Length: 384
Ligand code: SF4
Image 1 (cartoon, rainbow, N blue to C red):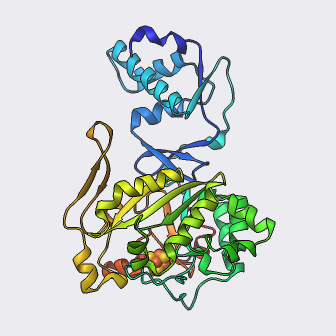
Image 2 (cartoon, protein in one colour):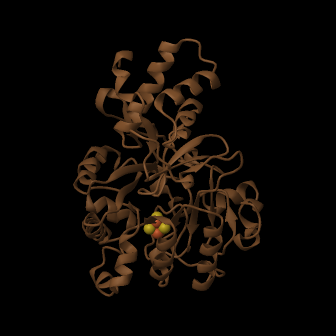
Image 3 (tube, helix red, strand yellow):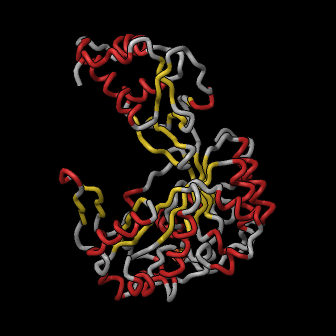
């Protein structure tokens, strides 16, 4: 882009789109999307600075002058190109727009503090599961003996609301709890909800037809469904997850596709299905879904000679346009994705808190206090 192309910005007031919240985590700035119930980008300091000024009150020129001063920029031409290119990219992605006169963006969209900014909480609502996947690293199946009751979960949601949490991610297999729809209805009226599920309950026609209109409305309010499917080949998926699961997941995808929710298909990659990633892409495209992959982990129920042989022995890289990797699935455990204490924590089925979504037994290897010492109810009147 040339500096002469910048005329379009003159006297314009950039403003952050209503869907977005700009906030600072302990280490980085992020853009959070209400529509997707998750952070959609991490921001370096210059980008964070520019976006923090997109409140509809300053013109492009004001922002540029301030940027020069704050970052001690000497070369005006280079800086001008950088700031304008940034704004142009952000507007191309719909993150900001330009107004011709000053406007007041909502102050709730700018949560810029120096402290820990808790915006998202994972709720592992149960250890129960309707499936017994043979590679489940969490060993899920039966509920924990001390799981919270419906009323206690509602109280937890009230606490999180007071703490200004924006999004809740329900994990475990939420639909294994009979009261989940009730909890979901309360959650979806107060938070952006991101739901991780194996999808088999949503794909079950008898279950779905038994729901009331109000319960279906609650389901449709979920912003993002992350659904597990390990292969586009039914026989491989069902070998790991159980007979009939593939078809139920496809029924769930067909159902959700008609709603406004985003879909993410999540797959565990093994030696057996690693060649099928392109086919997974084609399947995902049918449902307008994004894909996410993790390598098979040798823990929980996957600890067996069969799954030992299926562990990845190489990092899988799938190239996309311009030969840039679109997926990179590291061999072995996927715990490198851990985002420990970066703006969120996980509440376990009994209300105790752990820093991220890693299974309890991994923390136990380090120190059980990491997952077994603080309950959400004790944090009610504390600052995080
Ligand atoms: S992998 Fe997921 S769906 Fe399968 S048993 Fe574990 S929690 Fe349930």
